[in-house]
Image (cartoon, rainbow, N blue to C red; front, side, top):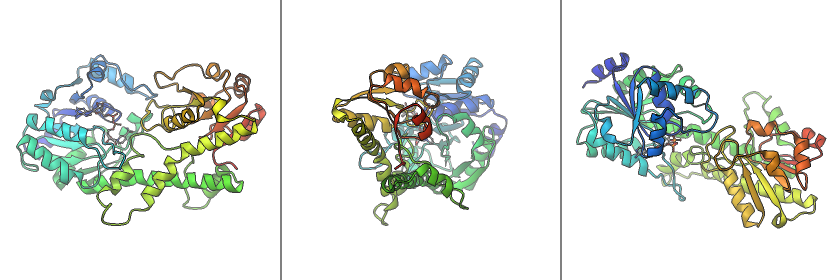
Length: 439
Ligand SMILES: NC(=O)c1ccc[n+]([C@@H]2O[C@H](COP(=O)([O-])OP(=O)(O)OC[C@H]3O[C@@H](n4cnc5c(N)ncnc54)[C@H](O)[C@@H]3O)[C@@H](O)[C@H]2O)c1
């Protein structure tokens, strides 16, 4: 099948689509293409996930506006079917891949899932199909890993028997559908013609710019944008520590700094989590590591990774005011996801804090309205605790009755790692309150 013919099938929505990996990225992508009129088959290794989707139930628990409803509709209308069997991809004209791409403790990319997907896809790949990697990957991975592995597993030649592209995702949990529809994308093709075909495909679901590029540019753009965010958060966190040291208030400083033209300082916080920001800077640096000095990226990672420990220090200092040692306390940690109003707990800063607290022999309770196993009534859980630590700014926490919280606590301490409350609010409620970045 030529690219012209594929473009025709795409423009008439007669192309069959496959989506490999039905997580935070793949599931909404599959739903949106199905909504756009394509027949979509989704593949995931997790049978439980596949069964839930086929029953019209979204396996994503956090607040995801529109996703559960859209999923139920496209499944009921027969446009989305999911399976654990790669054989079901045999007649797909386009296959997107959105499997996880973590790094290990030495910051080396772990492409176990990507390799396995490419190995299993190859033998069933239809001639003329377009394969698009949506997972975030280190610059150079399309050329060094994806292309040769797919050629080997399929016995076919790239740009002759199949086409290859990289279109990294820019979604955030909590806004999956809105981001997919409204945020621009880079369509990196192995050839300019492939990039144009990708644009024709994504035009069915994206109402923002679709920029053609080559694969390495697409790989770079994605990893750079997340490294940029990590470095900027680290800057805000370092300023927060400086403010504490010199008796300033980072929240006020940030507000005033941002009145200066061209300044857009981010919020400080209790740490950076999730699947992306914690590893994409390492992906960006990976290939260049032994060629040039890479200093800023590791420094930013270290600052951000140090924030849960800093929150522990703030808690210790605040408990001291009430004459308490960590060892003899019961602490309620609010929020286990890494992001407000999400159920995504990957690389959760709260997990790091809870582990440290337990090492210090404190009794730890963790609450999160979105994470199974951690749900419950905040005030009931706070009963008899010595302190509450806010690690995630879930909407529910911002609406807590602080006077009732004070009444529930044995020592009225709140350490706020996210700026969920103001010092005035806390003072009015009679709390001993400490906010990150406030000296
Ligand atoms: N989560 C985000 O907000 C986000 C945003 C932008 C980019 N990304 C990138 O997108 C990729 C996917 O992220 P995610 O958050 O959707 O991950 P996820 O863990 O939520 O989903 C990945 C899915 O792939 C499945 N899977 C793993 N190996 C498989 C295989 N061989 N065959 C079929 N299915 C397989 C897993 O079972 C899982 O359901 C990553 O590279 C990530 O960096 C994620």
